[in-house]
Image (cartoon, rainbow, N blue to C red; front, top):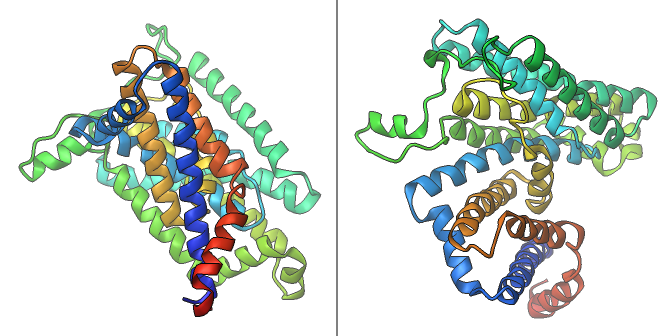
Length: 365
């Protein structure tokens, strides 16, 4: 086994160990509440996978997390910590919603590609401004992206309260889109082939999310731009010495971050709610950070981590419904423990695992 393979094995075992510790402590807490941890685990897994409705919701949440995690990962590879996915998803979703209201008589075959374009443009603009401030003026992207989250929220509140809300509607939301601009939901897609499944918010955007994973993998690891991006993130001074335009790559990275995060609006607005609503992103951007870090900022890891959080969201809802002593706050605690061990304490068990693995495979190095 080569040294690179050993390092990959160490990373994998560290991640698995951290997740097991998070679930172990969660089990202890559940046991302390007087409930059976094994029953709670089975209930959570059944809620996430045991029936078609639960699986649909799990993959629906997974789709959102893929977009925001990819948006964070691109910035991370460039040495940036993009916390602005919430605002970028908000603005991208707003643009998608306005497009659907404007072109409501058009076919989804035309509106969907246009929705991708406007998501990239408006979400990208919302990421480009902090990127420009970082590249040209040295403003820290954490501060600027957080501020832009608040600005996006204010813009959305004003538009939904004073411009887009129908006169007879009390809730701050737009009118429903025409059905011809809705993205087909998964139960409709399956019915085309003669299969019947339960209706859920899961829609065709899930396949688009998988395609985005493939595109990010190809561009980041197999193109010149991806090489420059990773070089800037690894060593900015070496990038300058190699003739790479650091400022340009920072701005481009933030544009791509915003565009990817903006795709959340396609899944939420065109595929599920079919209208513009307040807080449709509902913490998806911040969860995407944890998903990306747990997935080691790699598309395959992001897919698995997004699925994990989809399980936690949907399985947690089932858990709080079936076991009365475990409410939504307990589910949030489980999610927090996963983030704590896989994020903040990711290297807690790394030295011991490295020593063990290298001793076992030392002869092959």
